[in-house]
Image (tube, rainbow, N blue to C red; front, side, top):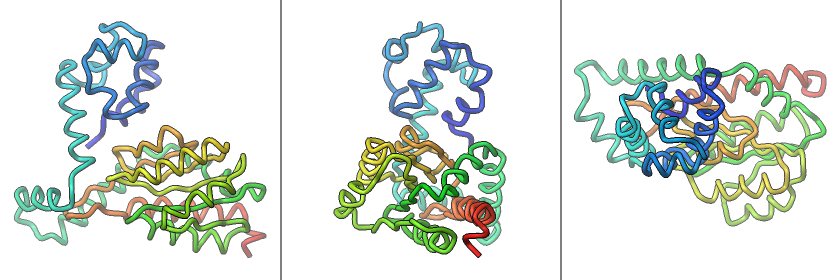
Amino acid sequence: METIAERLQSKVEELTRAERQLSDVILRNYPASGLGTITSLAEAAEVSTPTVARLVQKLGFAGFPDFQRGLREELSEKISSPLTKRQRWVDDAPEEHLLNRFTKAVIENVGQSMSKLDPDVFEAACALLSDPKRRVFIVGGRITRTLADYFFLHFQVIREDVVHITSNSNAWPHYALDFKGGDVVVIFDVRRYENSTLKLAELARERAAEIILFTDQWMSPISQLATVSFSNQIAAPSAWDSNITTMLISEIVIAEVQERNWETTR
């Protein structure tokens, strides 16, 4: 299901200047930014309340209350625990076998993610990662650290100056002290987002590093700091989210950077 953030991003060319200004404010602290009153949102974006009403209608909502209902549903999805997720799937489970349901969900995730992946965003990420003058730091969270490990293993083979940031967040300040302007910090962060990872991203931006983010359709708060974000569909009929789409995109990035650096890699 398309998120409100994805709708805003897909319609950016259709929006007026005031509506784009409003869209930026909504995305800045998404989805909490849209959960206040229509007046408070209009004031925060320095636009009129009719502008807010017009934008939510352009997004396909009957009105502002309907828009907020959608935001609250997304917020509930963001913070849902594995136990809550499993119970929902059990209650709604169709009769077909889990093998088919899970495979279908993953195929749909891949299709939706690839259809929304902007080739320019992909090229920008690969250009940063291919630049031998830039050091690359790679980090993941409690679950996504396995993806970060995999990404690091390949990049260590492809090019020089690649640093794997340990999963122990207590040691992260030591890595942050090494960040320099132009360095690239690759971060894997999916729901439920970790405050320690956000703090690391903030430190990276303070030191003028470029951030490449692998996240989900609800968008990690780090997306507001990232130079490039890959937003991947991850929902699956399980207590756990699926990492297949994120793995797919990361492997395509690995393949492209390998080709760009083939003489060094070989």
